[in-house]
Image 1: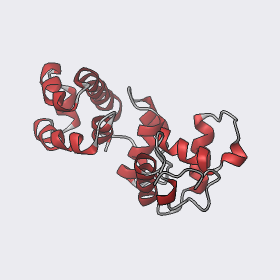
Image 2: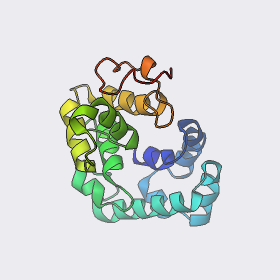
Image 3: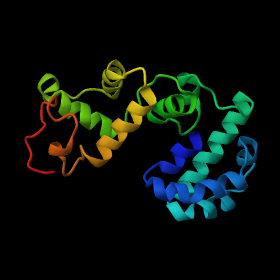
Image 4: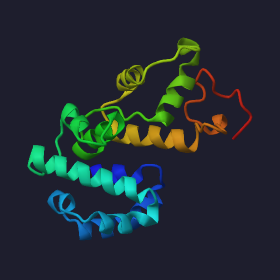
Length: 184
């Protein structure tokens, strides 16, 4: 799951999937990745871009996991966030999708949905990332994995930054800003 999150940064799932199998074949374990040659990693990641940054991040992450967690990706959020190049979003995604732990996966798309959904309550206030995480966690049902995937997709495909498709949104009747636009 951690590998997926790094591969998915600033690229599409289709692009990330194009290197995933080859990557796992070449680097079948965290130990193999920790010993990886940087140039080999960069060449493999070139298809999806940001190969220098991704290669460096993956190497640093793998080396840290080998050194501090005996090659096992930790489940606890604070342990995950101590891994180089792992932030709030990645830690929550690994916990929710990888370990099945109830955790809200919040990115800029999810923050936008919450900001629009609760526009009357939030107003023009600048909420912290932590406030959005707390709000998302309150709204998170027990079936969190499906919910997290759905909200991420909703933000990417329907409640978009540039052209929100409010008429197509399943939350439009609950949303403080829904149906104000004619886009669909």
